[in-house]
Length: 479
Image 1 (cartoon, rainbow, N blue to C red):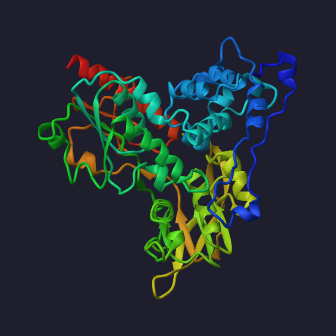
Image 2: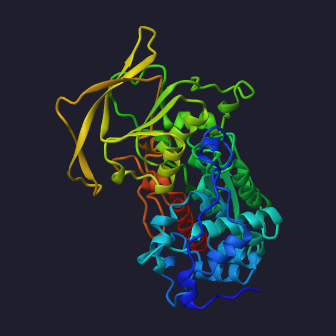
Image 3: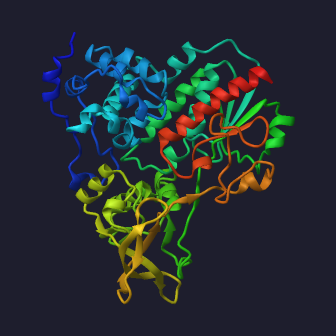
């Protein structure tokens, strides 16, 4: 059984890079880009942990995973124990290990990051989860069901099967409540299945994690639009639910509101990625959900976040001749993960920064043919803390395009607020909650995730779901 080397020896171990597919091979397939650590790599990487008396890395984790303890268990070669330790706080480790921005959260707080490279916490979380899934040593249902209490007789409706809803459902089923998750689409997982490409998060991983919840007793109902097919009042008054959690996400795409957005060939990133990810248009005509043919096309993606990187990398895999990012600020201001930016560059994506679209150009058939842009320069910081982009007078130019994908953020779907005006929303349409309990202005109704914060990360949504679950449990016990 392995042991931690001396502190001096640990400081000398270099961070292990993640094995990856060759860029010129992976940009033509939808297989996972990163291949994961081997057992030997994971053991050596975990040994880098200094086992600090005060593990500041935990402060950077939105769900407070006991990072030092699960790394210690890896070193002890007790992977089932490491899995159980992670699942005390996070029941989606295989997902979070892949898509969470650890470099801005737990790893940023790692003591080693002050003078070098932090411990690869996210990669180790993924390693433990993948081994657990492969060996079925500790499934999502085993941890949940083993801590489940006797049935409380209380019923909770969870609206949305994205990360916030799933995290909330996991904790509530563990507390002994009957939980039903209502999903508007035909597949479960929310943004995990429709928004994140297969090469970054395999759908099989999501299904395995959700299956564990189903085995633990959570009921899932698809094709159910709360506010349309079933109203909140009906859930309480006719279906007998005692509380509800709203985790519907932020799926209403934003557009720039510039001329030409109605042309064929102009997509929102939501539509483009949903067609490719969930409706498998990359396998058309086997799956009858086409998009415009990317083969040989010139594609521009507007935006600089993770969704923009996902969309532009998908277009490359769909056969685009040129795939480019058009972003109005410099690369330093891009909100996307550094890893995603680097992967995009390696795969041949062009970056046109400090550039902003003015209008889209089209032919007499209302089909996109190009885009007029203007060059930008950076001025003083704006409310976001990033330097404000300012147009450079006289720098307008046009470029020929076949497809444009707009990835500049999302707003909240107004359906629930329109049908339930008693639930308070802010000027952006996000639901207003008590940040300590996630309670909305309607009694018995809680909310969390992107529907409250706007577009954010998977782990932050999960943290909100868990906070709400604790508050819902208190509410059911006292009410």
